[in-house]
Length: 273
Image (cartoon, rainbow, N blue to C red):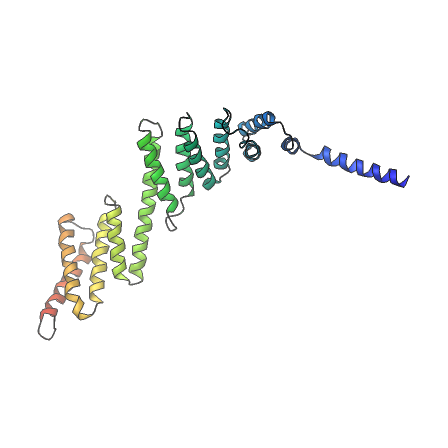
């Protein structure tokens, strides 16, 4: 009697556990590949991306090389994008584009791969590796699909990220300046002008180059000052040709007057140059 009761108890527990399983949990345990694939598509269409992703993961290996694999792999990559897992989305979309080179979905995959890196692009104060990746991918997209309706959007996003990278470059130069590391500030500002020659802030950046050079010269040992003040004069001449009416004119006049005065002083007897 006791044994019968124990067996009955376990039967009830097992039955209860089985009946409590959700449709999704029961579905995952099936060996029916066709059903799994169909349900994965249904979950994807219903925007239940986590469930769709789980089912796609269980079938992709088994349908490799089959007709169903193309759409399934694209959907699988897209579930990562929709769930905000952009690093994985970028990887799988790029992998899809490599595996299915003749697919009608390749253009969309290429765009979404770039877009995933754009989504990962952080504040301008942080590392801009993902911005650089996204820019490279968007530029490749524009060159590969010049007639695409996405081209205008790509160019707009490229401009956004280049603006962000420009702000970061300026912030780095400004930080060196604030720390009185004027030589590094000059290098940073000049690199900014090389990387972003059409910058809307080019005048301000060139002004900061002159100001940094002036302070660098003024804080140098006497034997180095003549050469370094001469650089200030050279930069100033080039600046005046480019911006004859500068918004920094007052401060520039002060720098010029002081620089010329120091150069004359250094030429006097008593200084060995």
